[in-house]
Image (tube, rainbow, N blue to C red; front, side, top):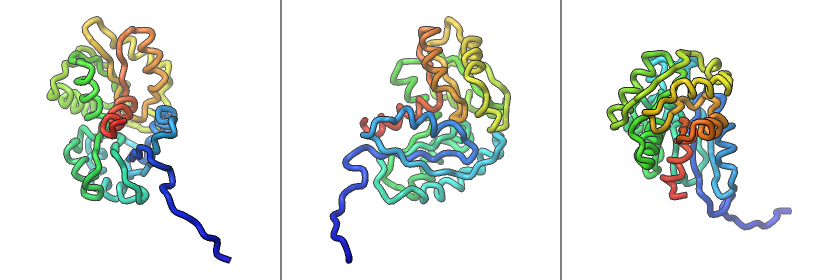
Length: 232
């Protein structure tokens, strides 16, 4: 016997956000689960092939994989899509990421952690930034150039100088917090902790309390900008 039914939206009239997660990322989904705990926002994830090592060469390879990853989202309208790789956005370029995403989702707004961090700094009138990364020098230097080109002054810098993604994902929160305290100076108005794979969400809260200044990570910036784009 066929049972009659009615159709409606599976999740009601809520905000829908898409997140393109690197194959090697072990962190951002757990942190976004906490950030987007309100049921008024639905978060859809897709994965993109990525190398276990973070170098300019491996990061560049992801550009051609972006359209395929976007095709794997379910058939729902998304208010905004975030490409979750700060270093990848640096190497590929935010405009090229948006173009690749919009080749499949032409009307969807697109962001990435680099774009989001720059937007966050402008919204909060931050011009002098402390900058912490886990990357090797060739990746960090490229990101510094992008931030400076956007009008930001990097007044202090530190890096774990690591290219292995699994190692980055297992750097302890206490090590990240200690590094933030090392690069904190009187000159910096805020501190940026770069990389979606660093477990920085708890560090952001602790460091803000200890240092008394804004701390932003790749993941908190990306979450903030996705909400801004979606008018949440």
